[in-house]
Length: 397
Image 1 (cartoon, rainbow, N blue to C red):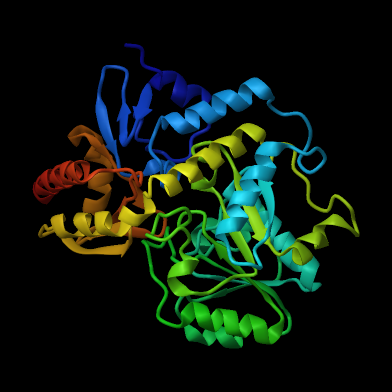
Image 2 (image 1 turned 90 degrees about the vertical axis):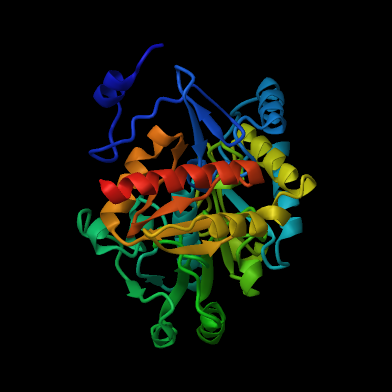
């Protein structure tokens, strides 16, 4: 067994003062394995990335076959690359009629950047409305529409003409005006602790955007590809945006993001100036091949159909004095505890009990349950048993 801990801390830029420092040698299904054979049940999925499970044979085969054909050959948009075209065709077949043109990028943050540029370019306006406790990424444009002053203030000044509203606060209708280029929103707020929209709230945004000529942007980086029990969360609320942002599970474990709109809106980036938005590696052929294989797996194995019942199974088995609520949809759940310190304790000590969970950026009293959608009922029961045992320890800690 060889430990890379010292070199990890020495040579790699760190994101927090207290990383979990789990060394992973391989992963399969819903499990991660360490160098000495340690096994961890994964309740994070790389933050809603590995929806079809780790080391999925179909995805691995797609990656291998495409890598043997060709890797990078040209910047995005210049050459016809069949993995991009075939994946776009499949995605469009699952989306509402107006979401028919896909721009592939590398990540969710880059997709948000592209969506903001597209919104401003198409409308000729500059103002963007966003929501408190929203998370859209860490690059400058994305950070400018992130709903946390703690994160924003450390890196200002940010983009001008961004306006924050309260999620589920209907007074936002008065903030969306003829000056507004777009409204960016998560249909279900993930990092806020899985906050659902109130009945009619997303419809209100849609109606107000229609009245003012603003574009409605849905960020479904975490909620897409079956995570909440439908292929896309917007289906649950019967609201169709003008621009849809997808990432995370989009690439089947490979880095891939996209922003999607109608062809007439997307065309705005192609002239005055030409190359108004470009990316070298966006839509990498191997990533598109992996993403398509993952989506085909979701569809053909009908994994989305079981998500709601699996989420209910977690809810029914997670009963403990420390738990005040299990909130969310499908397999995007927040387990809320009476004490934020206990939630941190669970995240830090979960590996000792054989599982991995995570905290939410803007919800310190909760921890995350977002396993691969392929998780079985027996694996759910195993996970719940481990969680309850750790909560028993946390009571005494």
